[in-house]
Amino acid sequence: MYASFLFINVCLYVVVNGYQYIEKGEACRTPEGQQAVCVHFNDCPSAIEAIRNRKPPETCSYEGIFPIVCCPDGITSSAHLQVEDRLKNSDTTPIQVTPPFDVRSGDDTENTRFTRFDSANLSLRKCRDYQIQMSDIYVNDSIDASAIKQYSHMALLGYVDDENRIRWKCTGSLISEKFVLTTGRCAKAQHIGKLKYVQLGQHDINSNISDAERRRMYNDIGLVELATPVEFTQFISPACLAVSGNFDNPSLQTVGYGLLQLREKLGKHLVQLSPVEDCKQIYASNPVIRSDNVEVICSKVIDENGECYVDIGGPLQLINTRYEFGGFTEIVGVYLFGSSCDQH
Image 1 (cartoon, rainbow, N blue to C red):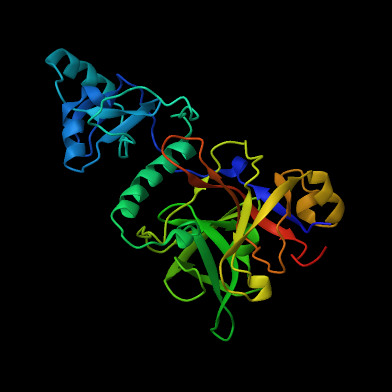
Image 2 (cartoon, rainbow, N blue to C red; image 1 turned 180 degrees about the vertical axis):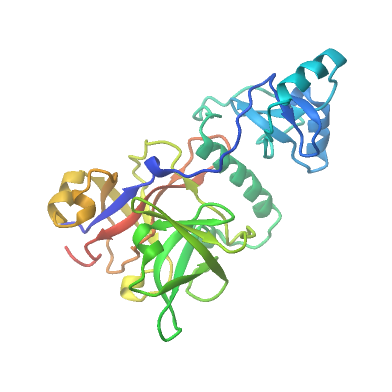
């Protein structure tokens, strides 16, 4: 019999920044306050020039994988008046991203081997932005750290007890420059101590500690806000929140430091989805299972080897290779509780 674990489904609780989505032909403003119009990237000379100077243009939305940019070029007097009218009651500022293609080619052909990019999916759009940002870091870094990169979103949560000792009792996942995703229980955790520190970029429990500022809870999902934004490196980068509800994937895995067994070193297990009814039978007395307001995922470890790298707050994740901008870590759940890895 396999050890069973329960994860909360993050698909229904995705929290994203409130970016505006502006269609092609609509009015926009540049960060400098210039009146402009959203046009296809290839139709905006200033956007192409900005890319050559490594200054990403402002993006309004997307057509497939290609950005619609806020372009101040070539606005005629009549067009200027139309734009001005539409901007009178608007304070919209588009988001800033880097185009995910070679601007020298101008090729609009989408690769049919990949899933079509859905520009209305805010989680997917933000995920692509981060992947593009991190690709520059990896290209410019000569250190071979492939074993660590796959864990670069992992975070340790440090609690200060009554004797002023730091106790590392939960894990989480970095999902942006400012936020770590974990469980509501870990975000609260008053029985452990005050959540004060977040440790990032470590394969072993060691250093690189950031301050935790605030905690927010949504059902049993917790968001830990960092006191200062994180600077991404090859060792520290965000994972993507679930971009769809389709994660019945043979390569699902859970990652952790093995805090339950005091291993204090990152490792992972392959897991397989199980019917939720299985977990409901095993954990029938748990209030989370009894609640109809929480979407849960039941899974089981399929590569048990005597070690246990499943921590409360840790991710249920997969490597998503369905999109043209490259493989990325996609978090589909957060570990709530389960039987220990050595129970069969």
